[in-house]
Image (cartoon, rainbow, N blue to C red):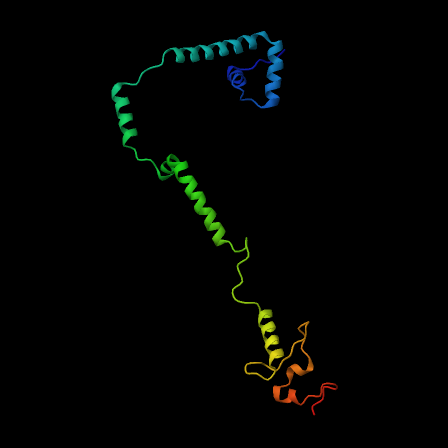
Length: 173
């Protein structure tokens, strides 16, 4: 003897509210059982009749209710989000431009900052040029730099001792 499904289970099946395995079992049962199929078709026809009646008899709100609703809608102030969304493109482009400028100016990680001042090699070159023109002149330190910017032994001797330095041996005369 085959067990039959109750009306509530058939309604759940009609609305797709059953688990997949229960849905498959009920589908197979409806293929074989004519009494459950008749109840299922009766429920489906009843639901369709209710939907058709609801579409046919669309009721109007009373005029006082409509007037109150429209009055409330007209006097309702939009939120700041709604106002911002209404402005849309009028605000979006300037805001995007301002954000781009802020990101460019405020992100030194994305671009290197310019180096302030003069590099040290400039001062070394100037010092070397002055020392070669007048080794005993004012403001010229005793250091003499070679072309590869390495200091010689004479770079640590002051100018008075440099005059007595023997060129061949590097010894003081």
